[in-house]
Length: 92
Image (cartoon, rainbow, N blue to C red; front, top):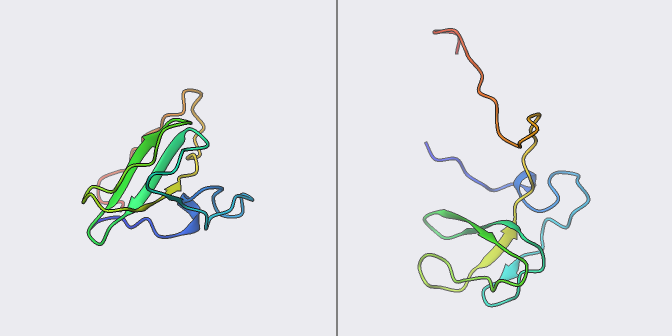
């Protein structure tokens, strides 16, 4: 079952983070801030990393698209990685 990226919680600023979650960046525009961006087509979501000054590319189908910045994930690890959770068999 594919996970859908459809809500504000994954776009720039996050949910209630003060960022403008409706601003997108069109294909061919210059990236203003380095980060991870998401674009969607009819069939899939595309996630790509752009550096400041890069030009936003077309989608995987070659068509113009709009890129939205993803908010950083929350993590308690110093290196920014995720910690796995062990669950007893049959607990879920």
